[in-house]
Length: 453
Image (tube, rainbow, N blue to C red; front, side, top):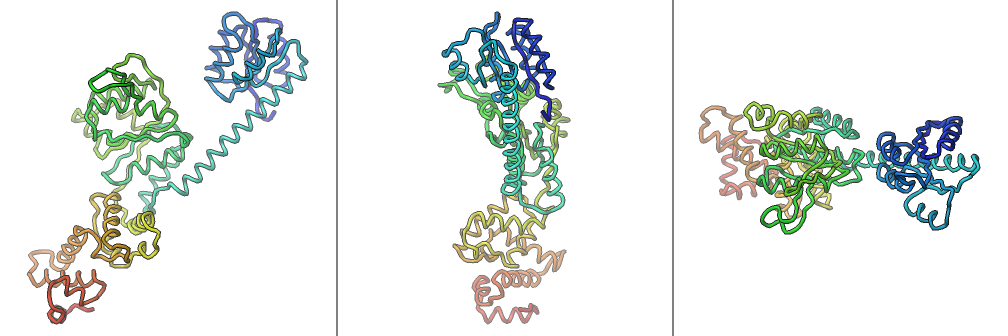
């Protein structure tokens, strides 16, 4: 065997146990021995062997109970049952309960070793298959789910996210609203070993305290008015997967205490219950607040902050990654349209997009392009299709560039005419319509202000 296989031997007959120990150690196995069923039940959680070889009839706990416990600890653990009083019925029951094999005493050592070799090989194949599936999923996620961006500050964040994704460490993502925190959280989940399980998310600032606690931890029937049946909370529902806590800084001190307990104890207590429910879930939290400042003001618990801030990711605002605006714009347009013509962006549209500061970040850019596509009605996008706030901002910048202090009406008019003409692609007739003047008047103003066309 290329790697030592760990086998747990369980039998209340000391002579048989010692014989099996010698046999398997000589074959290169790592061996742990238990002289009773209860001892084996305790050892299973600690040792997590590859194979369990157990007698069926034992005082305290039977081999079938050992089998059941092994299946709880690891469904892929191979359990081989031995008995001196075999029957067809007991053999069928053992296989139905998940046993790998069923042996009647006495048996030949060669037969037993052959069965154990098959069990070890099958377990190794299953483990390799699981790892292969994980690797394929990670590669697929890297291609399809990777957030769009090439700015150095953003790429550095993604690289760190890719590095920490396979771990179970808690992640705290900070950044302005709309900067893509949930997108990065979903990317981490997709790359993790939990990627085949659920990704649940909740905005902690969107719900009142009582409803937020019910959503997170669940509740029992009758625990409060309107609780007509038991409800499973998001933490339990995401068992084996990931829970994304958006706007974690909006939670109340009472909710923070319960979250801290859930993280520390890995269990939750539903509202109205006293019985804890174990959970296996990875937490990714996000906030647009400065939590360290909130701690100083007494608005956020320091112990919860340090529990969440194991891995810290800070997303830069879109105004600091202007090179990503064209990439993101084309991505959003392509996602919404099958028409290549609609996804093309001319230089004037790109210029307006790149000059805007995007206070709403990536979310605002996506919404602005959705607005433009609807207004364009299937035609190629032009600056006039963009939301007015983007176009107004550009006029203000043109005026500011022309005369930063106390601009005259002539300066303002010149800047506005130049911008409208650019927005209409140099078409003077359409520009005159937008300005509300005759084409002849527009020509006179172009000559007056020396605007080249």
